Image (cartoon, rainbow, N blue to C red; front, side):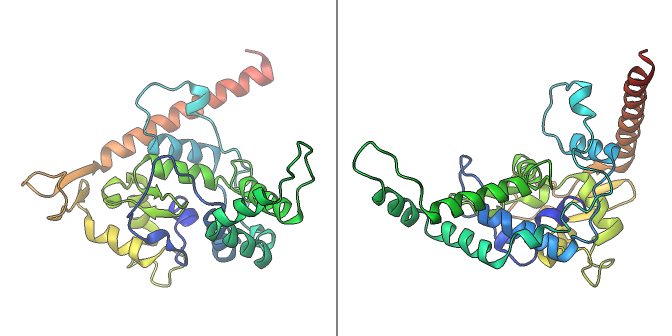
Length: 279
């Protein structure tokens, strides 16, 4: 899955269920770095960036916006080179020394701030920043750059999953699965689970998706003849007494994807013709 493969490594506490969170919180550079490093080490030599058309459809399908979008926005292609191994060499940048500094900065943020303030001169004259401060700022800049749209797009993926109500950001910057995340999983991810990385298909975990993700989705979603049916539980207050409901229709999904792809192709052809021939 292009989605979960990038953001759900099995070795960090991202699979914890939400306990405390705030909409104003931002992900800690340390946890973003952990995800980047994990994907690079496990799948960096395999994961290839999607084509422009596939990228555009993925973004549109998962969008929570209901207002019309301009074609320039809706059909925006992959900001990275399709087919490139965007995560391949990330692990070499996030070495153990840098990861240790990022972890220390996350564990003791108030201590770092206090130390920095205590070093400030009493006069108005500004002194050069010390080595620790420079290294911390440089580490955060590196993580920001590596997770940007230009390099891996990981930060954008996190933003999308937060907006969908799948991920939540705790006050300390940790990324966790939000309560009820299974119900909000997009149709495209369920199809990828069915076709690629479901528990019965990916028995050797080649896609590096945590078993708790797989089995949680499999236990709550059932693929029937016409689409995906969500299985409610007694804890799901959002459902009526009727219980299970058909949430995603496969025929509707295929039709939407086909129409989008045709419109995308026509738009790209039109832009290409205008660029080459001025018509």
